[in-house]
Amino acid sequence: HSALIVEMLDPNGSHGMKDLFLKAFIEALGISDFNLNTKSASVEKEINIGRKTQTTGGILDIMITDAHKVIIIENKKPEKKLIDFDY
Image (cartoon, rainbow, N blue to C red; front, top):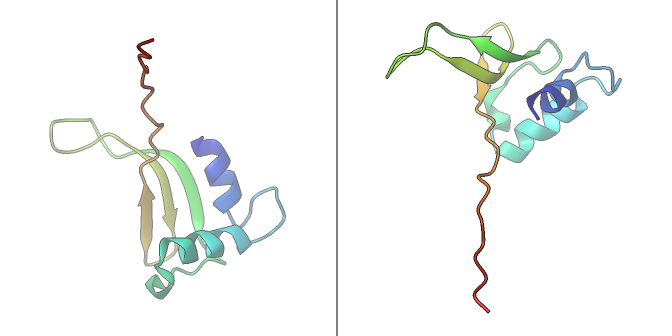
């Protein structure tokens, strides 16, 4: 899922919509006042931030950056649950 999200949010994505989706995403999050420069933003996936320990490191699923700000997205898949129907 991360690859699709990155492609949609990337202002330079193949969709040709520039920063339209990134602006809509930021607005939907309610952080329009965060003032991320969506025109120059970079959107990357699976950023390694060092060896994973109990408290540090690992991989960031999605990172959106401009020259001064960062938005990090942890993309989790819903947990599959088995439903036991008792008839």
